[in-house]
Length: 110
Image (cartoon, helix red, strand yellow):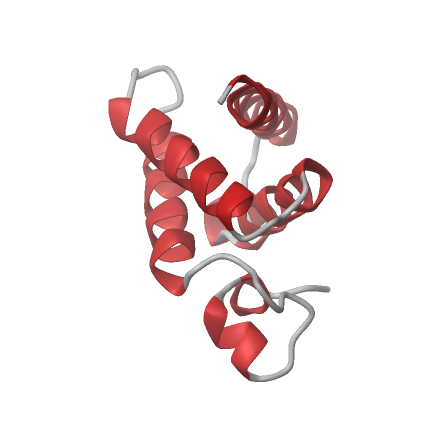
């Protein structure tokens, strides 16, 4: 299993798999917004869009391919305690898929 730190600068400093990965600040911000989104999936959160755009811009600047970014997003999502212990797994998967679609769209639109 890949841990969140492996996708940040801290992980690359340790020689992790994410050399040139996302900044620790971006990963932390992503965790926070995803946690909020999980708690309130039906509430529109403009911060989610801002964080996804930041994620995409940073990924492009660091030459991270879309496929790598999606794997990073999935791993961040899967490592959140709120998703690991969710009662309604099907609903969680639908939210996860929607986020992945938004991320892909943002990556190729920008």
